[in-house]
Image (cartoon, rainbow, N blue to C red; front, side):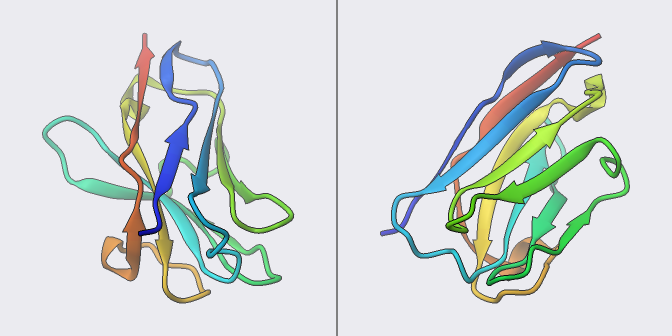
Length: 125
């Protein structure tokens, strides 16, 4: 079964930057849209960013991270990244990467069929 593995989380201070990575266990996602979600303690999982599949690299962001976070994928199209700048304490959450079946951009969790186990990002004030 294909797995997505996130890495790069940790404890940082407000204003710092962190880059998360998400690599699949197999080369299967170059044509598929991928995205990042996050879940803070006691809250629902929420959309953060998405990137389209195939040759396009269209991106879409939640308003709360627009201008601070950047989603990208490597040239092979499998590994995705989330560059997070100007971090705030409210960005503290477990961050999950996900892969969809389609190649568009999706902001709802039900559009994604593969999920990683998450990586914790904690931003101290």
